[in-house]
Amino acid sequence: MKEKEEKKLLTGNEAIARGAYEAGVRVATAYPGTPSTEILENISKYPEIYSQWSVNEKVALEVASGSSIAGARTLAAMKHVGLNVAADPFMTMSYTGVTGGLVLISADDPQLHSSQNEQDNRFYARFARVPMLEPSDSQEAKDFVGRALEISERFDTPVILRTTTRISHSRSPVSISDREIIPLKKYEKNCQKYVMIPAYGRIRHRVVLERWKKLIRFSDESSLNKVYGGSLKNTGIITSGVVFQYAKEVFSNVPILKLGMTAPLPEKLIRDFAQDKKTVIVIEELEPYIEEQLAGMGLKARIIGKEFFPLYGELNPLILEKLYDEMMDNGLSEGPGQSIIKDNGPEGKGPGETIKKIQKELPLRPPVLCAGCPHRPVFHILKKLKLKVMGDIGCYTLSVLPPLNSLDSCLCMGAGIGQALGMEKADPGFKGKIVSVIGDSTFFHSGITPLIDNIYNKGTGIIIILDNRITAMTGHQVHPGIGITLMGEETVAINPEDIARAAGIKDVEVVDPYDMESFEKTVKKHLGRETLSVIVARQRCVLLDRKKDRKTEVYIDQEKCEKCGLCLKFGCPAIEYKDGSYTINQLQCSGCGVCVEICRKNAIVCRESL
Figure (cartoon, helix red, strand yellow):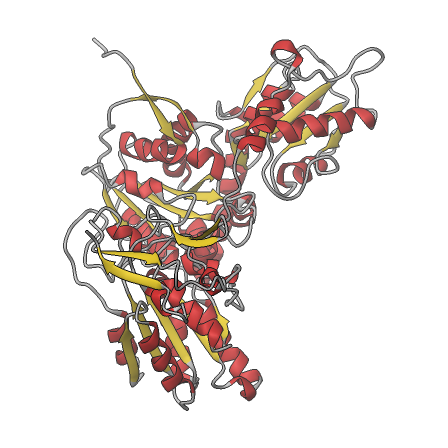
C-alpha cells in the first residue's frame, strides 16, 4: 500500500537538491555562486550522493563529466557567469555526450541581485545544441531534474536546467518521493566518442545535428510544454519559467503556452497554438530568445514582445500590468468590444497593488561591508595611499562604494591580477602605483594562473590576497585553504602564500589587516620594488565568530570627541551619528578595535568587556 504523499515547502534550490536525490544522482559538483549556492549545500545532506566544492566551475564540470563517463547519474551546478568559465568543456561535451545522465544547472540572475552582468544563458543551449528545461516553481524544479536525466540518457547529451533567482530562492509546495535506485551504467572504452581529435570530432558534430532534429520532435510531443486555456480566441501568450506565474496572474483569461522545454523549441506545438490567433504575445525576461525564433517560423499571427517588455531586469505582476495598459493604448485588442482582460482581483485591486505597498514600506538598505570586516582597513589604507586598485569579485567589491571609494576595476573572478600587469605594461608610469586584490576562495578559483603569468612576464607591484578563511560572499562555504571538504571530511589545507612562493615569488608576507599601522608599512615597503610581491592579509571573517562572546568593548568618549566626522569616513556601520553625537552601536560592533586608530584625538576607546 502506497504511503500518504508528503509535501514540503521548499525553495527552488532545495527542490533541485531533492530532485537529485530522488532521481538517483551519485555525484554532484559545483563552485558556490549566488543564486545557485544552496543546491550543493542541500545535496551534501544526502549521504547517498558524493558532493564537492570544486575550485571553479570548469573543474566542477570536468569532474561531473568523468562521473558521467563512469556511468553515474551526475549533477553540476553554477551561476550564469560560472558557465562562462565552464564553457570550454561544456561545448565539447555536447559532442562527446554521456554515459550516465548529466544535468547542468545554470542559475541566471536577472536584475543583477549578486552578479556583474545579467546575461541570458538560454543562448548557450542553442549554441551547443543541448536541450534545456526551465521550471516555473519548486515542484517543477524538483521534477525537472529527473526529466533532464532521462532526456540526457535517452539522447546521449548533457542537459541544461536553467533557473533564475526567483525560482532559486522562492518557496512553494513540493511533493516528496523516495529515492530511485539507478545502477551504474557499464563503462566501455569508446575513443571515437570521448576522444575529440579532429577526425572523431567531425563525426560527432554530425551526430549532434541529427540528435537536435530528434530533440525537436521530442519537444513537440513532450508533456513538459503545456497549453492553458482561456476564453479569448484571437490572442495567446507564450512564456516560460517564473514569468508564467506572472502572466497567468495578470492575463487571467488569455490562452497561455507554457514552455518547460525551451531548447529546442516545440515548433509544431507553437504553430498549432498560433494558427487561430491574430496576436501572440511573448513574455520573457532579458533577451528575445523565444520571440526571435518565433519570428523565423513564418507564423501568420502578429508576434509582439520586446517592443513592450524590457531587455533588462526582472519582470513582475506590476510591470506586466503597466505594459498591459501600454499594449491597450497601442491598439492591441481582440476586436470590437473585446480586449485582453487582466485579473483585477477582489475589490478591483490588481496583483501589483501588494507589490506597491511592500515597496513603500521597505526601508532602504544599501550594501555595506559588515561591522568589523577585515577587508575595511585594507581598503582604507589603499585609499589613503592613493593607489590604483584592480579588484575582483567578493565581499570586498563593496569597497567601490562611499566612503571607501577605493576600487578601480572589477571585471570577473581573477581578472584584477592580469589587469594590473596590463596597465603596467601599457604605461610604465603606473609602476609603484598599482595593486591588485583578490579573495582567498577566488584565488583558488582563478587567481593562480594570472599570478604565474604575472611573475613569468616580469610584473612588479603587489598582489594582495584577502584571506578571511572562508568563501564569505556566498554564505561561508569551505574551500581548499580551509582543510575541510563540503562533506565535512578533513583534508589538506593549502595556503596561498605557499603557492606564491612555489611560483617563484620571493617577497611574500602574511599580515593582520586589523593592525593597520603594520599593514600600511608593509604595503609601502613593497611598492617601490622591481619584482612582484604578495601580501596575504589574513583575518577570519567577522561573521564566523559572531556567536562568540566579545572580549572587548569599543566606545566613543564624548568629552574627547571633537565631532570632526573622520570616523564616519571609515565606513563601519557600527559607527553612527545621532542627535548631534558620534556613537558606536554596541549591537553591531564586533569589538575589533580597528577604529581606535582612526581617531586623531584618541576619543575612540577600546576596553575589556565587563
